[in-house]
Image 1 (cartoon, rainbow, N blue to C red):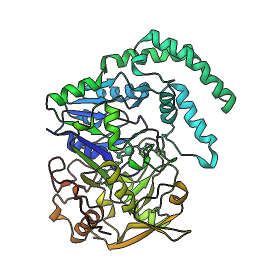
Image 2 (cartoon, rainbow, N blue to C red):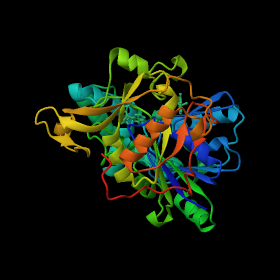
Image 3 (tube, rainbow, N blue to C red):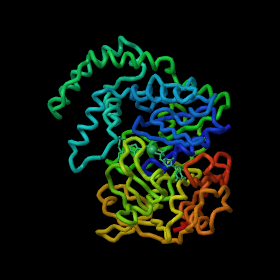
Image 4 (cartoon, rainbow, N blue to C red):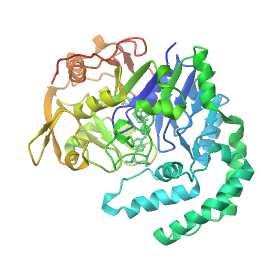
Length: 445
Ligand code: GDP
Ligand code: IMO
Ligand code: MG
């Protein structure tokens, strides 16, 4: 029995869904604890590609419970479309459970997200436009609509009649947007409530019962550590807490229930949206990093925007190890580096103004935006690794790349992903019962 958190260690899109899918085999419950339909999680099984936004990717396995927890924000239209599409593709969705406490993304959240980001001008965040920020803002401001309201027509009507006129003032006066019609929203959302009702329950109680019954729970993080509202590269972050600690709050369970935390990182770095990115590369160098064929080119799963690409950043990952308490790492997309002559690893930053060196992430936005990477360059392996299934199958230089990452982070790399398919995976050490973070006094810098 083990309860495990899978968390993104970078700026999202690390390949969390592929690792969740792998680990879901031994899980009984798969739980989304934060975020909403800003997430885009891709799983490729038997040549079929599934893209999840709200439903945990564990739904692909029969007889598992897939939970959308209290800390999430749910666009009902999207979750309904998602489970109807899955049903049409022959997937059994009866194991889906949706928390009464999760907040509902309303039409004004969608409209305001896009208008607010445009209104930020040069300070825009480049949000996914899925209403995430405004939904969480209303939750914190206690103007939120929860799933328990959505499935109760009387509550829903009262809330809509109270909230929509308030939002219309902001929409019209601040953003010159057309006002929304409360009646139309109620008619549409009442039907969403009816469709979702069979899945709605107190998921915290459900998970607590499962833990008591010694079931295996897998907490599937969305976004990533550097997008965390409190611990990410603020203000270029999302509005929830993807970090491992967020799993307890977002699922409604205590920290004593957690056994393991697994961080997922690409073998390089990507980012969608705005904000500083010290190891970002451009032009030919960027094309080389994206060169693994068009099918796996770096485009956002949710918005289709091209992902910015750059070298692996140990400073960011060292920070991710710290704030998540990572036990081990799953390193994805190692195959994307197959064609490179040389690979850069960012081992520290240098302040381009003061010359100061940073081994730990400088949290002040003013400093972070002006740091330059200090690289260590290692040789590539220039051979396809798609068919490698054990660490020893990997070329020497690929093994050395893993050794160096492990040494710099003082954290074991337990899983390596060498392609997008389920079996394109090397399990080096049991990620659940195996290695713990190597806590050493020495600084391997
Ligand atoms: P998530 O949001 O963290 O779940 O990641 P996404 O699904 O948004 O993006 C990861 C992309 O990389 C998807 O298209 C995956 O199919 C793909 N992928 C995952 N692991 C690997 C890998 O090891 N190699 C390659 N080439 N693609 C991978
Ligand atoms: P998954 O779960 C990558 C980014 C957006 C933007 C910022 C804020 O697939 O890893 P938001 O719409 O959340 O207010 O946008 O966060 N972002 C992601 N980037 N992967 C994601 O999810 C993301 N979800 C949000 O691009 O920069
Ligand atoms: Mg994604």
